Length: 528
Image (tube, rainbow, N blue to C red):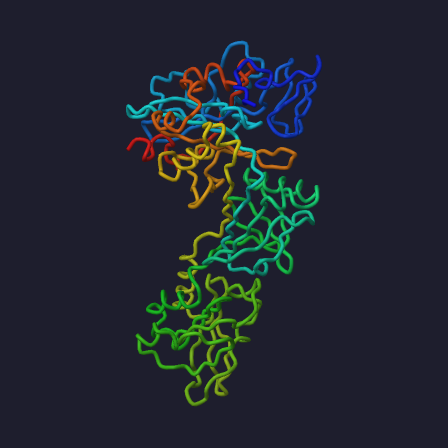
């Protein structure tokens, strides 16, 4: 049976009318029947005077060529649009004037935020927009994806012990992810994913999708880790671990800290121990200390000696010194060799961030006695802290672009996949650059901080709704069997809106956006 070709006039494009007062929304598998004046279960579509409308505005990016700054601009308003939302007085006062002049079409980019979806999969994407940049004919396919196969990879810059690897992470009591492999100076979490969204209880799926939407939209979420910490995380903000806000990311492991600051510590102390959950460093045994001809101190450390001056497992993981569970640094020193150590030996013990530091001098019995830290040592400890970057939470959205997305681009979806792998297509999410993973399929990853605010939504299947755009040369789009009958100029697109919802009121808004992202239509190979 042939698949019908949709047109702007079909009932499927506007929502099948159930009765005089209801419309069936087919933008996701839920198929809500929406009464007039009400919205669907996702709060993204509504019945306005018998017309199915997208509640949220479509976000456009505009490049200010004079300053290379990227700004958000609204749809050019059309008189008589009942759904048009006026910009706030504050935003209007600060936003740049724009009269809709699109003679320089490469200044405007339509994002997938608020654009609507291709569901039920056979429909072309809501916006397939032609434009020009530097004389090159381009096309951008714009849609919102409904993602069940998606997750968040969260990087938390801290040495604090958050929980054992593979430990379950819970939100409101439900398992929503797990702790994964720690990286240098950071703890890593994997949150969401298809098994939590669809493979568990209904409550688990609902809480998982709510958690993912909140983090994607740069809001805070409270999580607990089995056998570990209670944390509050938010993209672009320091994590809060057991009620304490983190401030520093370590400069390096204990061994690296020894090496970096060995020259500054030389001649000012006789021994330095940098406490670290992973690799604790001891200066006089370390290669740096040997190269400086430092005399052995006779210190005897706990833990497992790796190479000279590098010790593993000196303590258990925790929220104390250097990401260990200790509050007394002397607890990791087993003793001193009386044939080597001497009374008056000066010992500095510090953490990898410099947040914890103590100064000791050995007495006649070779016992370390804490004393006031000399100013010159205090300055070096402060330098260690100065070299620590701020502790932040980074949230990366990771998703597989499946059938509905690819079918919205071309009737032969594998050609889109191949074109992306051959670097013929630039993939963005809300205009932000997306990393496409190697291997099969279209697996994209994007930093949510680079996306417009409120880029993510949900549907109660449950699944995440997120923007995605595919930009390429018009000739490449034609060659991959793209939906050429639905290609519209930028001017026509702004005037008429999405092809399958033409005539529905358009909303507009002004929002600020940082200009750090590269312009989506100016990246190789599009203009190469």
